[in-house]
Image 1 (tube, helix red, strand yellow):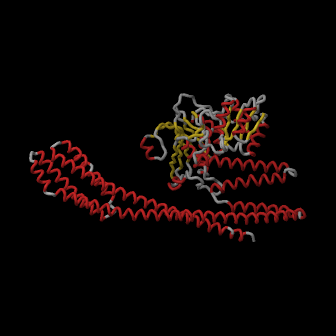
Image 2 (cartoon, one colour):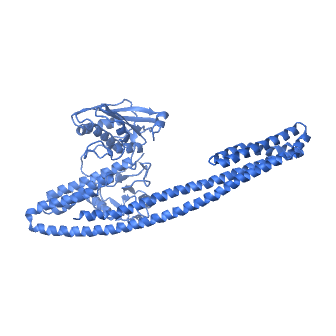
Image 3 (cartoon, helix red, strand yellow):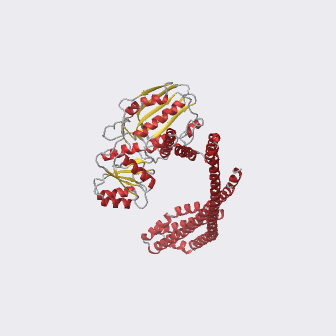
Length: 625
């Protein structure tokens, strides 16, 4: 009974959004028309300017001709030659400008003919004078032909100028009208936004009343359930089903769909854990584990989206791709399964690659999982490494590819392959050919974004029923340093504080700050805290010693990078660990951590925090590239 009114409440919002969309599109159209009108005004001004230049050049040439005929001095021919030399360019520009106006084009033809005759007459008189016949030259001048031609030229220019002036007045009026319409459109857009806001507020109020009503109804149902223990289990199942259906109804697809699913796991599990905490601690712990898993999946989705958008913080270093592939062999065997044969073909003399090691491992694992899914009945997976050079021709034929030397990792499967239309969309986010629940559609897009952010290139070669090869072109490392050792994930106790180490935590979000403080105190650190940069500097001024500054980057008034710079002026030996969920600009530029920066990305677990804090305090975990 509540469904129909709820859907009816969406109708005003839909109408409001439609009106807003129409108004905005109309305004954009009017802006475009105004730009056209302004362009016509500029066009008219160009025509008038060229007409004035032609007349001026002819007059200057005529003055030079007369000076030469009267004095015989060749110095007068310099302005004559200079003025006539530029007439051709002006006429060409004028012809192009009036090409859209047939009447002006006809006037231009006549004007050019008279100009050519006037130039010919001036040229004849000058040549006669130079040939020793000044009397003949003066006689030609006295015939009045030159004056008649100049009068005709001036009249032609005046006619074209008058026509352009008339068009200018019309076009300026049109531009003013378009500007007025744009203002009206903007006003209409503002009114539409205001109307939409009012509708949204009204709808929100209705939803709040519905929520209160639903809450009261739920409380009443719970009261009844205390008296009907036999029906409790069925009623709880019904409530959970209603909550699930309501969540599904609010999903809009894509990012919103995945995040809402993950948040539903976190919130629902925590609610169940709260209810069962006293009565059944084991089930409560299971619910809390489910909540943690949902949060980790949300963090992984965020990382994938950051990878696709090329915004994740990278720590590139010299990497031996052969050792990386060899170190992944056991992981790949467990992940791929025994029904698929894995073969590695590792090149001798392989160049070191300049890449983020962890992200490259994730990319290779993603591609191997895709290859496994393409071979449901078994097959062969080949991982190959090579050195290669992409030349100028290849770079010109592929977007965002720089010519140069690359290390290539090729992942080849004998699976189902892909047709051309699937290859074209393979890197699109949320695009997948797998069944429902078997893929997020973010794996290849994550690989693509990471490799592009690293300055590399990705290429897919595939044919239906013939298998697929994905090539990762990774930039070659040209430094003299040896390749870094691969990280080894060994199960060991969490690193803890040593002696009486003091950490200053700076975070503007109170809940996040308290979480970080509690985690660090659990690890044995002495912790002081501040909610912003100003308070942190005050703490440093009165605190005799602080070993580590653990600060958020994005904060009001003073960001974390500015705080760190000022804090080190007070305590030069202070070590700094940055954190944020948004890494752009402050300590990350062009997708790469700044040299000398230690960073941990939000969200992080206590184990990640323990390792990173210990590394920074021990002088490790800092980007040195």
